Length: 239
Image 1 (cartoon, helix red, strand yellow):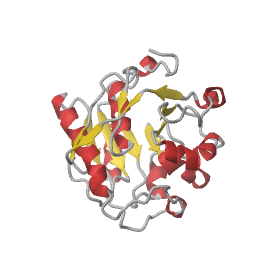
Image 2 (cartoon, helix red, strand yellow; image 1 turned 90 degrees about the vertical axis):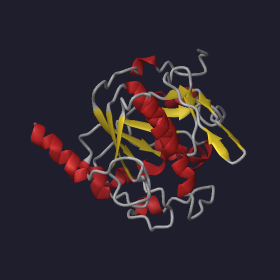
Image 3 (spheres, helix red, strand yellow; image 1 turned 120 degrees about the vertical axis):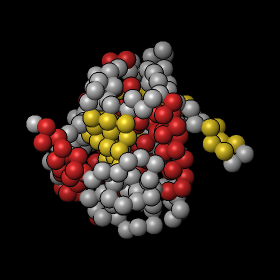
Image 4 (cartoon, one colour; image 1 turned 90 degrees about the horizontal axis):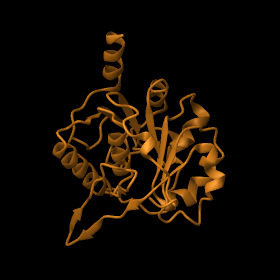
């Protein structure tokens, strides 16, 4: 492995048998839901850091795969009070991020392999060893799920996975973010390509990682739905 990339082998199975939550930035995401997860293992993406000023929640891991997002918000992320491992693609970011400046975040540069799109069909790869490479998808969730699988989690719950960009955002801090790339109202169909491929690859691996949708509403119906309140209540009952 080239020293251009971090050694990610230290993350292999470090959360074996555990559960985690992924916080995405769909229109349904609320500050209240995020606050409910402050004692859980959580993955955050993209503009989630904009919630930091309104909540005591901080993510356990942060994933950033898009160079355009970094150009828009990277400096703000680096200057935040976040103190967790930050995963981001080395591809396209070499000139943007200086490795020595990222050490406070224990940053992890990974090899990001771009999938091929041809004849209207998407061929999405999948990596079982993120220390070698991580497959790209039509959404950052694709990289996140490969990282989660590698860490050994057996359950993952997602919120803010609306796959629908036509609705108004529930939280003003996230609504204020204007992406560099215009997202069409039916952009969720593009994101669903990644979700369908995630389902396919996890089924091939006997669903050792089970995915549940705790999003309030939205278009993602590929995975069982369970409310965030029900998930947390079950855990309280076990304790």
